[in-house]
Length: 559
Image 1: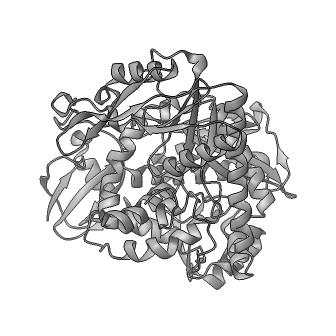
Image 2: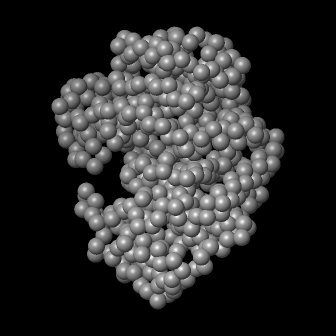
Image 3: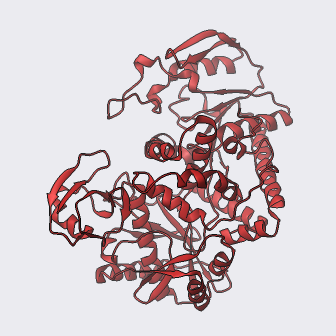
C-alpha cells in the first residue's frame, strides 16, 4: 500500500510504502523524522480522521499538528476532558468546572457548587488538579468514544444531573445522535474529536486567574511552548460585562436561547440586546467628551462590525454636541510599487509598513491644529494616491473618528500627542456556550458573519471564505490582537441571538461543501454546532443600524 503524505498544508506530497492495516498514529511513527511537530489528526482524502483510524488502501494523507485549527481544537478538547476528570478527583463530585471563554492564550474556567454558586479554588487545590492531570497523562489512558441516540443521551445526562445539557437535548431541533467520551470511568458529552489516549497531551499548565482557573497550552504560532500567563484585564472586564448582560437577558446557554425562540420571546430579546449595545456606545461617547479626546482610533479583527460601530459612535458623539469627522486609513496606503512583500514574496497590504505613516501623522496633526488639509484618496485601480478631492478643515472641538486595522498600534500615530488619542478595540466575544463544557470559539462566530456577508455582497462561496480564513487569522495575530489591551475601552459587538439568525443564511452555504474538498472539515464542524440552535426565520425586527445588519443586509450604514 502506498501512502502519499505531507506534513505541512503548503508543503509537497511525499510517498511511503507501508503494510495495509496500519493506523495513522503508527504511520506517524514510521515518518516521525519528517514531522516538525506532534500530530493530533489527519486529513485522509480530504476527510478529517482521528489518529486511531486504520489505513487499508492507497490514499493521500495530510498530517495535522497544532498549527491547524482542527488539530488545535482536538488538542484543546482532549486537554479539557483530562482537566474535568482531574478536577472531579480533587474537588469531588459536588463541585463542577464550567468552561467559559478563550483568554490570555488559554481557556478561562470557573468552579461552581451544586447550587451554581462560584467557588474560588485555592492555589494548593489548583496545583493538586495539575498533578492529577499529569498522572492521567502518564498513565496513557484511552478516550473511549460512544455515539448514542437522543433517548440514551437523556438517560446518561439525567444520571449526571446535567440540567443545562438535558435542556439542550430537549430544545435542539436536529440533535438525534449525541457523541460521548469516557475516560477512566468519567463520561461526558463532547462534540469534537479527541486524540486516542491521554499520553498525547504532553504540554499544559494550570494557573489561578482572578476568580477562576486558566488552562494554558501551546498555540499555533509556537507549537512546542506553553505561552506565559498574561493579564488581559480589559478582555476579562468585557467577559464579566457580557456575563451580566446574559444574566439580564436570561440566556447563558444555547438551550436558553432555544426556549425563547420556541416561546416567541426572541423579539423582546433582540430589542434588549440592541438597547444594551446602544447604551454602551452612548457611554463611550460620554467618555470621549469628558476626556476632550480629538483622535478616536477604532480597530478589531475581521467581521467585528467596525464600520457600523464607527458610524453609530459618530451619531452618539453628535448627541453630546460634537461634530465628528469620520475617515478610514485605507487612503494612506503607500504607492503600490512600494508595498512590502511577505515571506512568500507576495504583497503584504496588512502590515504597518504598507501605510504611509508619516503622511498620516502630518495630515492628522495639521487637522488637529485647525489647518486646511488636502486629504488623499487612494485609487485601488492605479495603486496611487490622488489629491484635490477632499480638502478638509475642522473646528477646534471636532473629533476625528478613524477606523483601521492598525488603530491601536502606536506606530501608526507615533507623532500625535498621547493625550489627544482615544483607542477602542471592537470584537464579538462569544459568551453563549453550547453547555458548561462545550464552548463556541469567537473565531467561528466571526467566520460565520464573514461567510454570510461575503456570499450576500461579494458573491463568494463558503468554501472561499474558509480557505482564506487562516491567512486572515495570521494577519490578526500580528497586527491586531497584540494591541487589544492597549485600548482605552473594549466594545463587545456580539449579540446573544445572532447565531440563530445567521444559521438560516450559513447552513445551506456550508452544506454545499462536499467531503472531497479541503474545506469540508471546518464546514462539518460548524454544521455540527449549528444543529443545536433553533433558527430565527423572521429577522425583520432587527433594526437597520444593528451591527448584525452589516452582515445580513439592510444596514443604513453599509450599502
